[in-house]
Image (tube, rainbow, N blue to C red; front, side, top):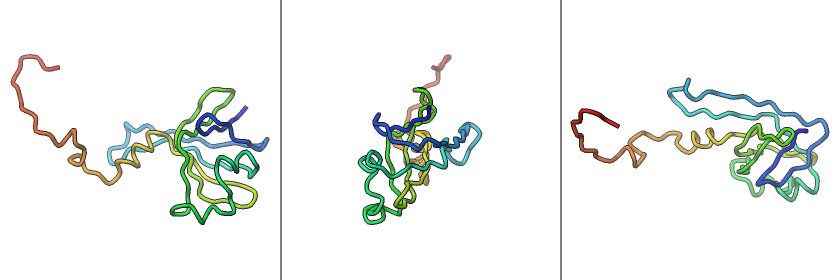
Amino acid sequence: MLAYYINNVPLALATDSSVRITWYNPACYFDEIPGDVAMGIDLPVNEVNRAILGNPERFEKYSVKNDREFKNFEIRFSGRILFAGTLVIQSTTKDSYSGWCRNNVGNLGKKHREKFISDIPAFNQDITFENKAIYN
């Protein structure tokens, strides 16, 4: 059974709910940190989902850039976690919420996008070189 959770609180799904998950290997990318994505997430508007995600009629009034992000989102199948990350709701109607999910590696990539290696404090320190026979 497919289930969606936000902060370990289950969302109410339609009986025909499905999701497409795409996995990326970040080792194959040198110009960005890609994250796995879950696309085509559609949630029905009901009292359970409305309490967690907000009122879809007022979505555009309190959202930024017309999307909302919900951290600690999980997709589970028969209790096993298939995907964990941030649910991004891009649009709503009176009947549904529509969006996608970015995993935690994608969240890291988003956080560090457009940064240079010298912007990271750990790489901006002077280190004294010591000539040794064995390095750890």
